Image 1: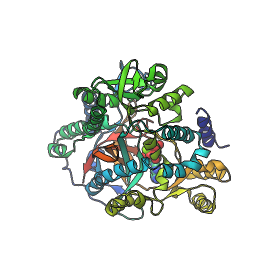
Image 2: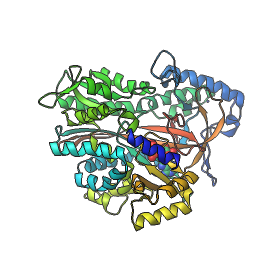
Image 3: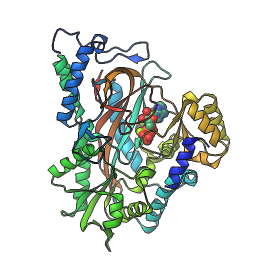
Image 4: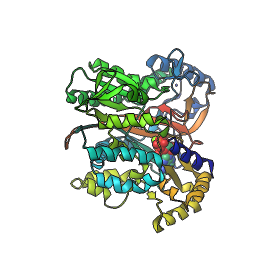
Length: 510
Ligand code: ADP
Ligand code: MG
């Protein structure tokens, strides 16, 4: 069996020097695939200048708190490094940036409505749950809490919808959604600190006017507004916000940005791992959740989206305990399931968006504009047909399992092999196919600890954070809450910042 399929099954079981420098030309779109970078080629190719700017940039990153723990010592803050980031901000078309912000509240509403439609979730996820053990276990928790009755009518959503700027089939790029993350959507904290670093690089380069144009990022404020409001609605001043965290927390500083903002608002925060909830968590008769004797008002997940986060059955017991509780979950299990690749694929079917947003055709239109083709490959003639197309033209599709966190998707020749291997097996329902976006290419320098600074052709991915609160049947908060720009070399088809592939960036609107 192909090793990727094998590992999937296996994981299921275990479950910028002041001088006369060229002026910053407003970048123009060209006929070519490559978008002209914010910085002209004379600068990009001046290696002394680049080295000078890179040194300044790295120190600025350390000073402004764009930080990550090291690979070597991932659970200690004694030795730390800058989180990987681009030397220059990357150009982002203003219209696409605005479009992504405008559609975010529609997505918030949509995600929330789907999370309340148990029939839709059950029907859409049935075949996937049969083929994928991880989805099945999440789904079981969902059905169990549904049967028992949902203890908490208030829901907090913090999601991030991710997009690429697609060059097919037109010359002008369009905004196309890659996915929406409904659990543990990360990097708001660090992303909010990168603008200061890029402004400093532009100042050192001698471009203060341009530096001033770099957008600030209010992601942390937005997310914490949501968490703090949820905490307040819970109504118990001594209760805390529980951050559920991984065993190995390399990205802890991103989380700390949120924690510190909450403490400023006089909201107390505790951090625990899932296993610690199992060991020291209790539900009282009123389903109030206590950990180490401390009442939990809001359970905010920064773990729990990958089979690796459930190292033992006790972690699953802990997840169930949290879901059963009165604590306000971010997200609840239903909303977690809405973020699966399978649900994303089901939304593309005719009439589905209209079903969830019947009174808002404009919202349906805004959402649909961001979609590319997504296809079920469940057994049957439709599945067979799209599998045959993908096998004949693997460069035009992406094969996706029900996994999050980067590095799981299958492209190109590997897609052909894996798809060929599963096409006659029930396991195929564990995957979906998606049209492959052919993103705009831009040049930049990626600053990664220990790596040489070299000019690279890159693609960017824009994420917009959404925050909402539902209190019974009404959204009492619905925000577009800031953004994340991540950039990676074109040679990597997949992989995020945490995976060591993508780096943090800021948009320079053109
Ligand atoms: P994950 O949940 O692992 O983050 P994503 O759907 O976001 O999964 O995919 C991970 C990465 O794979 C993306 O950041 C992007 O680089 C690439 N990718 C995903 N879908 C597509 C697509 N349809 N076209 C081109 N690249 C894609
Ligand atoms: Mg992603």
